[in-house]
Length: 264
Image 1 (cartoon, one colour):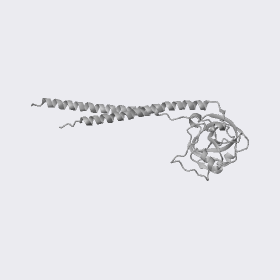
Image 2 (image 1 turned 60 degrees about the horizontal axis):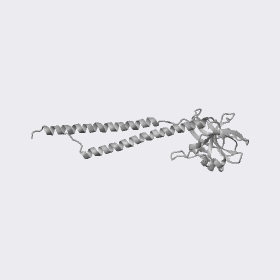
Image 3 (image 1 turned 90 degrees about the horizontal axis):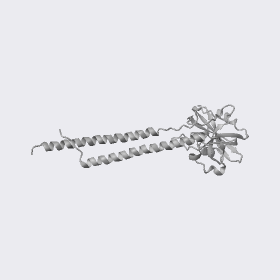
Image 4 (image 1 turned 180 degrees about the vertical axis):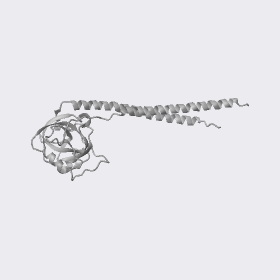
């Protein structure tokens, strides 16, 4: 039976392809380890912010300098009065930052007036409402609008822009599917609002609706598993090339021996 052996050019081409594949796989593994380090730093920062005592709300002069990286989830405390303007509801199938929330419902977003007259948007809490009954939601929110200032404690959050697949807002029901309070403010005539909104922690209404509460952020951390996968694939490629190369060497040695054994 004839044996087919690779040409030197073929061996070199496969070796180059293997090196490039190894570089790519190892690079992906290293990138995942870097992402893991960054995620752990972020988790540590968020844990520190969530556990910190609430500070004063940054002044309007500081608002433009706030960023999600350095300021998201900071706890703040300040006096504000809910304004008698149309509220907005944001549909949710649950919560990744509230362990006490499960199932579908909506988050109640309301504008509130600060002592200096500026407007800030408050996510006043969760409302279990699978049927999206607007009358029920309006009755619950109306109890919050007393005209009197209340000391609010909560967390600084930044808007989430709607994606390509995000369901369009239902303006008739004032129902959104993304937490973009800037879009809500424009649509509902809330005027100029702070570039961030507040996830309310306290106070809790006597009725318990809407339901605010403390946040507990759990970020998914699978980067080590991904890194092991990429490094494992790199090892498999290297082993496969080694086995192939060894087979080629044996074939060449066998062919060379047969040539020497032939009579002249």
